[in-house]
Image 1 (spheres, rainbow, N blue to C red):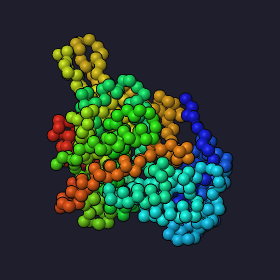
Image 2: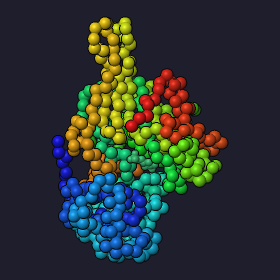
Image 3: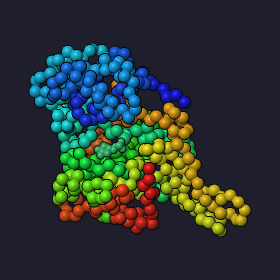
Image 4: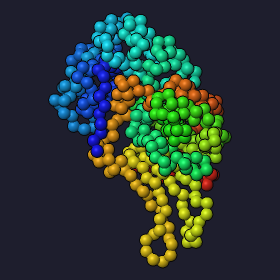
Length: 482
Ligand code: BG6
């Protein structure tokens, strides 16, 4: 099966913060991969913009180095050289006057104009104001902004208000890179392009849902950001919430940006405030393979959580009575992200020898993307009716062949959606605010109290207390394994 490349129009894409970490790790290598896939049109131009003074040639050399470092595959030098021809650079002062007229001169009329704000949110307003006052951006331009989109409801509202002074909502692309992951989009395909699951997709048939995003890395090197964030702000308010929305939402009337986002918003608004004892926070301790969180963060007093587990209820007709258990953490046993939908047991067993076990649909987001559904069958051989649970397996790599195995990086997909003008996989302003409105009280209550996160061993599944969160409901987490 050959993946199709849908051509995009010619564009000028300006990357503010082009010398920063995100641009080097994700944006520029992602664009190069799209170039290799023949999706970047011959006339497209990528304009790096940052404070550093450097020439086009220096920016191209830097970009080549970043691509060699972060592509994760051998780089075809001739193709890279062609790609670099699409790049140029302007030094701009986000808070001053330098560079803006030069940037204005570079923009070519009649093309798609996109501006990627890969900079601290404190600069969004300054850059937006200059783009408009220098007539670099107009009503057709698109702006792309990254997380963290605020650190609470008030700051998110302020950022939305700042952007709204210069751009319409239809021009603003708020990235949550989880929405760009192939398997996350597959959630919608599985749910809404098959008849099989949807009739069972409710509290009558689903016992509970688990969403796990486990990482093996610690926070070493990004302590300064992470200390002021913690797992709830860093992962739950955005990525985990988006996964929850895609699992829980009603079918949108069409696969259209606002129809999808309206349905996601309804899920966020239906989230009940957390009950007492429905959240567990953890912090990794030092272990034989490395330092603990407090050493990584270089501050022994910190109460920042590097792990969190929550029991969440979606209070609506479809889901009341079916809990959603979410957990995410650093330095856990394996890097794995998965969603497990556990169905209820059959109402009555006709077999004396064995009780059927509940069916589970496991959707593996990374690594080894795929799905499996556990079903009960008869154990082969004579000697009565013995039941065993087996998986009906579908690894996307096996099912779709080589092209299926090559999952594009989330950023590649999302940047091309910006150029196409498709906002379906981007968060709308009201969605982000609703997510903060639900998370704010959880964070405030914690910050007002004296409690410390529970320590957990690196390489484990998190603190013991997280296991008890499910045990007390007579359930258990699926084991964390790659
Ligand atoms: C980022 C978080 O948004 O997502 C990181 O800030 C986290 O802390 C990362 O490691 C996880 O993304 P992925 O794509 O590696 O699962």
